[in-house]
Image (cartoon, rainbow, N blue to C red):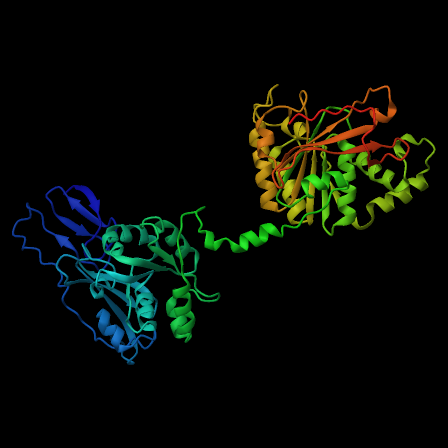
Length: 528
């Protein structure tokens, strides 16, 4: 006889072990089940008699191996059988048909191997313990297994309604959807699943099925996996406290004002690191972890030297390290720049400096390994590799601030990038997320296309926490003006203030940039 379909078994609960034949007959191939329906063409077939679900074998006794009293066992009609040594061999958990309200099936737990099997017809059965419930009232607790339901009821002395899903966390969504009307009859649904990964996945699968403000989720104390474990450990008062402390569930991103105090305090006391220059600090109020700050200027204005000043300041005023991704220059050139800070003069311009002197300044610059460098030769300009380097600098090497100089060299590797730098928004978005993920202050150097416009995309500035323009009239006949950089804050998400922050004078003899007064003959126009 040909098999025309497969389906779940009403007797053992298997999902697709029942073969349906073309004459309407059925047979379950689960070992030991015995479910069989004779088809219309079966000569002399006796009428099918399902196994009686009223054979309530076993005794209603305390589940001494699990701390469950006779009172609670009787309430749930749970029975036990014993082995030849008088020890409990099986628990028999009854499931009741929601239409007839009669016992229809048993889920049988073997204590020796903790295995489960079904007996009877579980079609149209409700949640475990549903027959004990009123179907309305203040609270119903939904747990992951029958023993947990008995345990919670035990710890509350049978006061509140407690039910369990049928087949563990994996069946949670199906079981809840089938009995959602019953659960919604209560003012509050208290969810108490196991603290393992399966339990957490079960919670995730059902938490958005309920009406708003209905659901509370219990977080068990550390070290405890489920309610029965707490019952056996005598931690009844601790469980009851966790149950009452369960907070109402809100969908992700939705929070009540009364739950924001800790966040307010954290925001108010966000630590910041000052910049090297007072004027910039007065506007930006320092630099903070989790921020993406963009420094923008035309070519040749001195972006890299400005970044060296920020790096040198951070490494000498903070306990954390500084990560340096100077994509426009070699590691040797970067090192020479910081060595010049110690020498008090630009060493690359000094033809008379000896190797012994260089060694001395190199030792001073590298002492304590306060900063780390990226040797970008041969790295392939791969964005994912770049992100992994940033992650490694932050999480493994303890870098609290990282400088990426500059954006457009990194961007040149983006697939599909063309003359208008397609994909730049996506890259900056990834860097913004990276700064928050790694809890670092990320300084990003960018070119400008014309005026105060970031090269490539208007979306760059929207993603940044701060946008700082560096402006210099480098060909001015007056050397005082030609060597002064105007620092303009164009965006300031933290404090809101914008405008000219300060002026930085480049000393060509020391190679340093120091804050100065605005030159009298300088004309500065703020475009705000």
